[in-house]
Length: 477
Image (cartoon, rainbow, N blue to C red; front, side, top):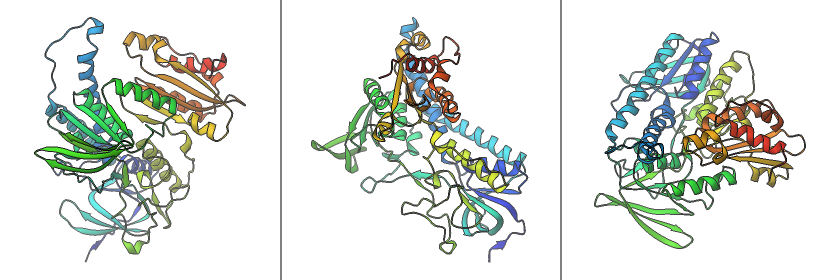
């Protein structure tokens, strides 16, 4: 018989990724007795907090993106500065070790933070039994117990989608997880999917010297991005050597003589490729399959997403779902963090709504793409009268000084009242620049407000000012 805990909690958080961790910390700060259950183990079987975002996603890939960027700069940018170096090489296992150490350090800091806030960190698999009970199986000794709480927050994240026609073996055919642990740089690499994950992985391996081919099933490149920005991105990335093939649907892949042979179809027929490695990066799905016992009657949709209301409440009283488990906004770590804090405060009797429409999105390629608000194509399709202003990076003095002149800033406003409706950036450090735009939209600022805000010179942020000023001067398209 399972042991039923006498240690009742105010809140049990299932999952310690960005959303769950933030929620557990905020619950504790608000005086709620909190437990955080997580089952993540690293390659050595050691406990690791942070979920997929830290261990195999955003932060893991960010460390390799940074290393790849430095290597690329040393090989391509030194000469323009009058600097010459020879025999620059990559020790890929050392890059992977650096990544793993950063992950371990961050996870350790997270564990220390849980302890500092008096949160019980339980290393275990968890399954919702009903609105107030969670079945817990320790990953340490396999002991089984049942924990009780007044409130339960589900935050188990997401995992890569698998393709029926492509079987991942993690040696030759990789998912987005194993793609971050290669020990040898492939000479020729194909990636199925040219979305956010596929492009970021392509950016890593292309910069490190792999001939990189992206096979994207959609006919449009980055359809969620403003069309002008995605067009600029396509031009830049192809100039960098990425081979992006649109409307390409993979129909088979097999391992032959330590290579991957794959076939794909496009409007011109069937084509074959032979590559050293194949990465499958076709999106993610919620980790809900083993989330709850059948008798719990937790309501899911046909794709496994947990149904929630505007306050992240499931159909079970006192049970909440946050982060990648729901369809509230895109699968973004910062979205999950905000939901985690929101639910903690909601439980404590506080309620500050999340403005999902003001969530920033970033693609960490080189240059980066970042945006907030609506795209020009969506606004025009909706019949909204708009004005559009832009400023190219090749006229920004900081960009000229650094030699990073690819890209632009684009601002879309209402023709009626000048309110900013969308800001779209492709630039070095676009991920940092977008914060100003998020704040502007959050406070219903106008392009006039931005154009009259003094920006330091010389900075990349002046491009935002100048894009806004172009609207003021009537230079919009």
